[in-house]
Structure formats: C-alpha cells, structure tokens
Image (tube, rainbow, N blue to C red; front, side):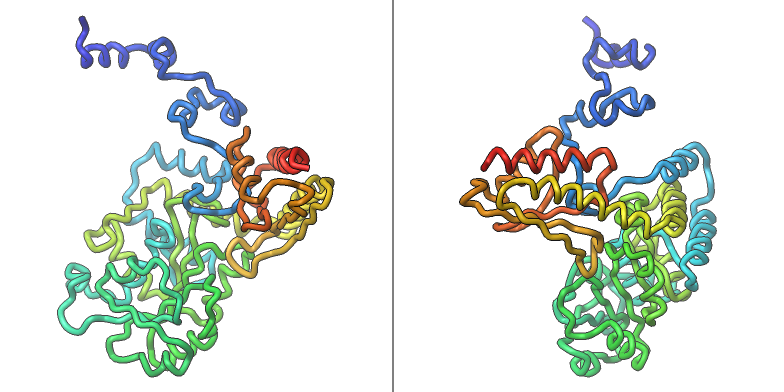
Length: 402
C-alpha cells in the first residue's frame, strides 16, 4: 500500500485537473462562479460556505464590499513582483495624500488598525525609544479623551497603554483635559452627540490636543473624505473595504504629517506595536487603485441607479395586499437609499423575522435586516442582476403568506 506521503507526491506530479478530478477534490464550477471562465474550482462549494445576495450593506462579518476588476488587476499585478515594502508605502502614501488634499496618509490594516496606530502615534510621537516601550512607557499614564458613549473598539486604544476618559459635554471635556491627555477620539457615526464635531475640534486646538475622527463606514457621500480634515480634525480614518470598495483588510489613515509619520513608524514592517497589522504589497496597491476609482466615478449617476433599484423592489413588495413601503437614507454610515417594508400581519400571516429567515435559507440566499415589525434592506452592495431576484423572492414570500 502507498503511504500518504507517496500518494501526495504522485498527485503533485500530475496536472491539476487530470490528477485530482478522480479524487473529488476538484468540483465543476457552478452558480455565480461559473460566469467567469477563469475559475476552475468552486472553492466555496467545496468548503460548504454559503454565498448570498447582500441586502444589508458593508458589514464586516458579511465580508464588507466587493472589489472592482481594476482593484483585482492591481492585486494580481503586485503578487508577481518583489518590491521594498517601506518604499512602496511611502510612494503610495504620498499619492493618496495628494488625492485627499492632506499633508500625509497611510494604508492600514483596516480602520480598527488605524485607531490603534493613531493612538500609538499620539503616545510615542517620533520617539523611537517610546516605540520600543509602548504600551509600557515609564511615567504618568497617557490619556485619550472622548465624548460620552463614544467607546467603540476601545481595545484598539487601550492596547497602547492609555486610560480612556469620557466627557459629557464641552465644559466637562475642557475640565478633563490635563498634561497627560495625548489624543481626542471621536466616533463619527455615534448617535450620541453631547459634544459636536465642531466643538470637539475647537477644544482640541485650544488645549493643543490632536483630534481623531473614526469615520470608517462614512462614505458615501464622497465629500466626507475631505470634510473632516477641512473641519479641523488632525487625523481621520476610513475603512478600505466598505464604500470605497478596496481590500477588506485595508484602511486609510490620513491628516497631520507628524502624526501620520509616527503611525507609519509604529506599523509593520517596523518592529513596534503595529508589527502584527501587516498590510502586504497587494493590499497597499489595491487600496490606492480603489481610492482612484472611487474619486473618479459618477456618484450622482450611481445614486440614481440605487434609487431605481429600491423602487423596483418596493413595487414588487407593494403589489401584495396591505404591504407598505418607505424609502429613507440614514444620516451617516451606509448613507445610501434604503427600503423599509411593513404589512398587516392579520392579512399577510408571516412575521418579519420569519421573512428574513426564509430569504436567508432560500436559493439564492439573501441577507436583509429589520426589526420585529418591519423588514429593511439597502441595495448598494447588490449586483445589477440580483435586484430582480430580490424583488421576486420578497414578493413570493409575502404572497405565500396572504
């Protein structure tokens, strides 16, 4: 009998398809993957991983957004060549800073990574000795101040050895700032606004405390990429894998030059606290190209397309007795056309939660969201050919319950 090692050697020597087809490890591509002849294997089917139509938006646990072909091309281009990563970071960062009209920028391993790197930058500055010591820097514990109820991803902050201080209103913020305050942190999408962005920035400048805005999910609109630096925030972060449609494991940190330089030195490939947040050359280049595409696209045309998609789904759902639809746009974070669907459950005898489960478990699987009395969705992560499918499936599920 052949040993496992000998068998693997024999299989490795055979052509991929011919040598493995009989083992059942290669499956014919079907479903969405079949439309692209470049796919020889349907990996998700092999692994038993569910694919779905995304009606929920740029949710990290649902793999964010999909990258355009140009970004994939940049990733493939970079994957076949060696470059010096420090040099690539510097050149790409400079290009991104030019596109965003700011002093400096850096590609991070997502927005949460940017939070930690920005905090590290505020703690260490350009002091290499402090970079080696963080988070255990001798002396008084550095502090990060934030509005009350803005404690999100706080471990990215506290990993740098800082104490978190919450302030309920501008006066309390001014009273809490002291010689240990190194950074002001603001969560852009927080519904709690005891301190306005403008007051937060103003107080930071008054006491020489740099201010940081976490705006991870807050494009569209495209104007937000420029708005917060122009408002006076020293540094800002956006996720790369949400509305910008770059790599899901990349993000943007940009703003004041000295802070960005300190963040870069605290990041991989340097041996500081950010060493484990490695961003490879493929993601660095892909992030740059994604930003180029995002800034160049016709945003008004895209918005009108999304509205027409929402109208199409609303019309299908609204054809069912007692069903009512409402279009709305969230103020911030996934700021795109949404659809809310309600119905008289005495006439359409199914709950919104059961509709969601039915859509999720159907074929194709569809992810939406909502509450006890309503169904909600957005369309900006859908492909054009998926809109009709969603419209038909929602109408069918509701009709069957009449």
